[in-house]
Image 1: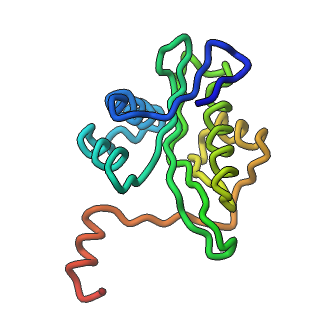
Image 2 (image 1 turned 135 degrees about the horizontal axis):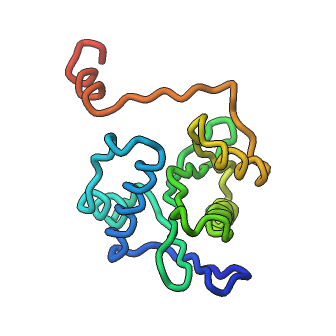
Length: 168
């Protein structure tokens, strides 16, 4: 897909055979973020959601010396203000021993290129407040924190409760 100046680094679009790698990166990222207890995804649901007819997300994999060492998982969203689709970067992960080699930067720049080709209005992502290395990295790219916005989330049991209650 894309080769950077470092000939050891390649960025490729993930294929169904890459699901075990993707799943392992998701678990490694969750460990780093101290959220491993929240991971309930499986290789089967990744296959179903990433490689079916209606794909819910896409994945780019970073290879260094032909070894998978990182990923960017993203999907489209929509901005009513922009009147355009955007891209939400759900996960950007590089194995710790390969950080500092430009892999994360290459992955996110490839996502940004895809957004440009698709005429997207924005690329967005979230970062944990304590993750200073990531915050500094994103700031160097020119990204700005959206401090005036707070993320809210409903998950599994709460979604079921609302759907089964009189609230709806």
